[in-house]
Length: 122
Image (cartoon, rainbow, N blue to C red):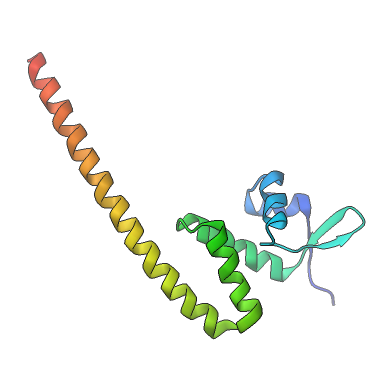
């Protein structure tokens, strides 16, 4: 029994991405669908990769980081990929903590200015 494959349109719908996004991910070699004429089909490997890509984007990783990370699996296997994942995750958590600190400082400054302005109105 052959595996279920999704068409280009089905892939866009399943992952709620635009056709432009899907074509771009293919262009930068994040995805390599099977091609039959002008049609593209995505099997289980591509679905798994897309899940990882979108999860990585949600965590704030760059597409290049994601591409490199996916290539490690292809070239070196699961263990190397997991080690690299830990390194990337640690780096991203540090970056997110810094962004959180900056956002909290900005919010505190905005609240102080808002409260000062409200106090002048009486």
